[in-house]
Image 1 (cartoon, each protein chain N blue to C red):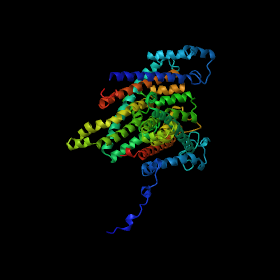
Image 2 (spheres, rainbow over the protein chains, first blue to last red):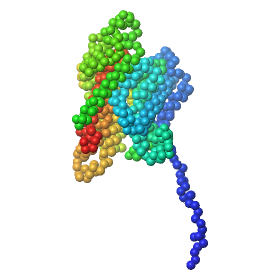
Image 3 (cartoon, one colour):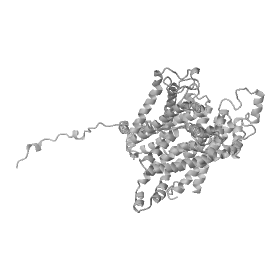
Image 4 (cartoon, rainbow over the protein chains, first blue to last red):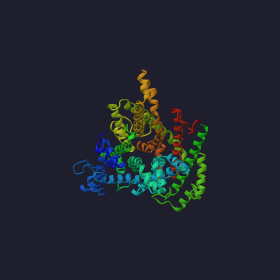
Length: 305
Length: 312
């Protein structure tokens, strides 16, 4: 009987069989890949980008500013010279919209940043330690939750001085809206801390803060981002409400909300003054909501229908 | 059940107590008092005023006095409406506010459930698009803008309904305010109802009902609708909060002398006792509503036990 020679060759190490061909993707890359396929969400994102460009770079391309009065040209209808018309003091509405957009968007982003920091910190501690601490911290949230937040916002704005400065508004909106975020983070952490990799990290001697910052919070990132994206338009909305009540941004400064509140007063003779800021708010709201919904689908494919 | 109720009532009282204390502290940390106006009041008059309203008592005594009064449902005198108490303002304003709130609730709940169900039944067809459009407009336009547009176009321009005023509660005066107040919640309820109805319609028991040959209205009314309602009921708590606070805007725009309007004007007037009284009232109402919603929930979904313990 004849045996083939190659049967007796030494075995070669098989490492190459375990080689992973596709580069590993991070959570964010994964989400972005799914997000890109969502047309509505992409439209929202592009709209948002244009709004930001309009608000922050628009003023370089027009010859008017938001504060110069021109009493010869009050209440002009939209024209080539003033595309959105002028207001009661002859100020160019487009310039004021751009400036107001900066304020409104800044309020949205900064206040959500504040609410995110408080919410993640509070929810993180509550979820990580669990037990009695968790119970107490959550009862406190329940209590705060049962008070209508508008009352709070108004009271705080009055306390901080009714001359609503930008910083005051950001802080107030930031500190009243963190409860939802805290609840979500706490729920995530409660689940995550029971996972094996957390046990492994702990066995290797990782400290609480390292576990928190390196393992728990990064894994809760999806819901945090979704909640933030949906909280930004709510903050812009609430600022508009504050302007309406008269404790928001004061003239000559402007936000979309204060422009709409001003425009409301002259609606019979000049509806444009309300229409343009209202449209700006509505478009922003829609864009953020589409992006938020898109993010939810992108981060949590299980939720998809 | 009784134990749960007692617990909830106790915690509701605790919440109201904390809110009153917090508001008290906030109100008294505002620079400038209710009598600091543009025209300076002479010091002697100011002293008398403060004497009359017990504002020169030590803060702790003021706090205890206020708490005692609130416990007897006495919210104190107003600073701006001479000779009237906050209770008077509430007695005058609350029925008006409640009427509009009630109409807006009917409009938002009825309209939202109907629109949402139709949208789900005609999924991806024209009615679905219309319902989604309405829902989108409702959540993306601030309520004061919505109220103003309704007032201007339906009220002044087309003259369909009177644009301002209470007019002794004539129904035609209440149409626009109720729609304006319901615009945001109707959008939310439509969205919620649409998603949950779509979810329910794809369940096995609906297919079973269909294959048994049940008529369409029985399937929708008895099997689909009742199960789809659950997510909407969880929204009722925030919904009532919105109806309460949304009234600030609507009453202001349509010039209706309800309590919402008093709240807004009392802020600009720095009428502390009115602000505090209104805050206490709003929070108490909301706490009660939330309790009722929780109890209603158990009647509608028998799987939920109030005590939260198995077999209890």
